[in-house]
Length: 267
Image (cartoon, rainbow, N blue to C red; front, side):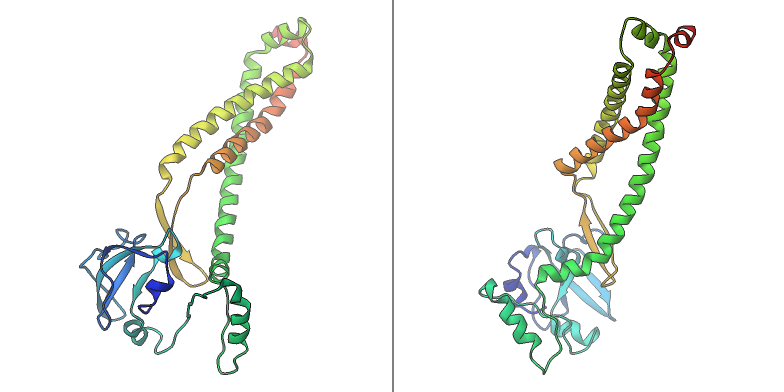
C-alpha cells in the first residue's frame, strides 16, 4: 500500500508503534495475527520473500478482514512479489452516488482491463466459497449432533414411561384423557431439552471473542475471524434444543398415551 491507504481506510487505526517509513523494509501487522505467529511483536523481524522486514506497528480495522493482513509499502513489496504491477487499486469517491459513472468510465477505457466493484461486493465475492464450505460443515455437524440429541431424548423418555407405567394407569383410571398424558410427557421432554440447551448456551459463552483462522480458498490467503455468541444465536440454540427434545419425546409420549390400563397396572 501507499501512504494514501491511511487516508482511504478511515477505519484503520494504529494501536501500537508508528507507520512504516517510505523507502525502508518496514511492515505493519494486523492485530488478529499478532501473537498467533512468531516474530510479530514491535521491533521483531519477519523473514519472507528472501528479505527481513522490521515490524514497526500493529493496526486495527474495526474487526474487518484487514486485521488478518500484513501491510508494507508498495515500492518495497512489488519487486519481491508480483513485479511492478498492481493487483488491485482502491479509491474512495467524494460522492458515493457517482459509483456507476466511475465504473462505466473505468471499464470503458480501452487502454486497461479492469473490473470495477464496490469494495463490499468484492469481498463478498471473495468469501463466497469459504462461506459455503463453513456453512456446509456447520450443517453436517449440526445434523449429526441433532440425530444424537433425538436418540438421547427417545431413550430418556422411553425409560421414563417404563418406570412410571403405574402412575400413567392411575391417571387414566381417574379419567385423564390420553391426549393429556401425551401432552404431559411432551412438556416434560421439552423442559429437559430446554435445561440441556441452557447448559449448552452457558458452555458456549467462553468462546465468544476467541480468534481463529482459516484459508480463504478464493485468494489462498489466511483470514482470521472471531467467534461471536450473540443473543439471537443463543435464542436460536435454545429453540433448536426444545424442538429436538419434542421430536425425541413424541413417540415415547405417544406410547404412554396408548398404554392399556391393565398392562400399566401389571407393570
